[in-house]
Image 1 (tube, rainbow over the protein chains, first blue to last red):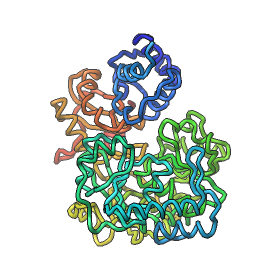
Image 2 (cartoon, chains in turn orange, cyan; image 1 turned 45 degrees about the horizontal axis):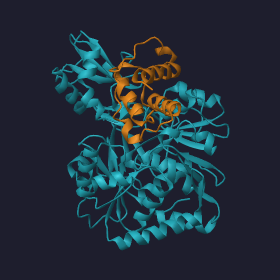
Image 3 (cartoon, rainbow over the protein chains, first blue to last red; image 1 turned 90 degrees about the vertical axis):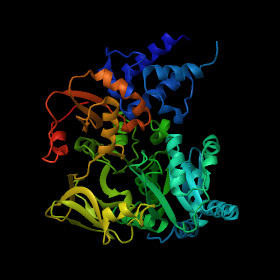
Image 4 (cartoon, one colour; image 1 turned 180 degrees about the vertical axis):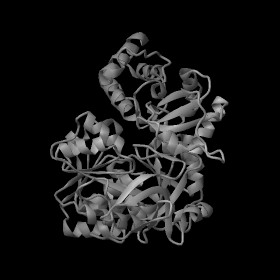
Length: 83
Length: 446
């Protein structure tokens, strides 16, 4: 799976969880906390849904380091099985 | 039941209800007698180790609960740590609190082991919790198993659980509200405590354990309700550790769930006032506590059985707030005609977030101002999240990116939820202090 595909899945998941955000730009460098409506609980929900979607598990201790949309994509890509 | 110590609590229920479930974690169930036996066995091992101060990198598991009770029975000082805190902070806290052994994630324990200290000689019975716990200003509050047991009694005297109840413990045990109201409250009543399986199971722990009672911070309750995650067996929710929007309490009540609101602080071993019936914001004072109001409305607490011994190695900080046995909370309140307590605001430069954590604003704002090179800013609560009010010409996104290194170091709930650029000067007193109350009243939206 390509990075672009992962990013697209992240956007879709966010828009599903936060319908009010649909259409809002979510770029790789978008800072999740300050530039979106996603609060700390919403972040947990989105990560759990992404983990289920991609079949990966990101250690909770790493979650705090995921600041931007690109950070989340990297964390998923790192754990996807090599094709 | 009122217990003097953890050991008494464990032995009492092991004798009274030996086969009744005490703890559940995932599919594992431990009866009261099994819990007592496991704790006593582990306490023996800890005594033999010769260690004196255990830092518990709490993960909320059954083994974690056994370890914390065992350390107390073994006469060790126990320090409750957040396993998700940055390593650099954990190292500082190890040194500050004299930890000479650690329990928790194997890799993290190994990483931190070089920073262990020689330990303590007078730690018996002490349990340290951190307040405003995410900066180097973090203070460890010295409580004891005795004060925590009295706090659990105070709560259960107002809100008793029955042995047939299952209390779901979702909150971190490193937070005194989670420890007392998520764990001790249930065990003191002989109820079963279901231990949450970690953050990623917030979404399905209610469905998995089918609890009848739950303690939650406002942010978590809002999430569980919005996502419709509460189970039909749930009949009581105790909300505490933060301001709770009325709509949230009303929604829960509309679902047929009794909602009580608690007020307390780490320094008082958790709750000192709880609403029992009627208006959830009108709280009755707990049996062991006396609450009065200062002339300016500040809530003053006398809690002889539950009061902290002080801030660890911070006698000057202790003396500022604990004066002749009276704790000066920095919170503002009023009594209604029935003598019930209502919280009306805060006197301190402190933001209390809906997840129960606190931000000390002068320090938080100074760190932001340093990065942005502009001191004309303030942080308020907007949509229940910290919101930066920035005075001057700037771009919101640019500010957000400049602050990224600082924000990444903070727990997610304490990071800024947005930036607002304003042109008018911030309201200030004659001495230059920000008029926080006036600023907060403007109804900011993140």
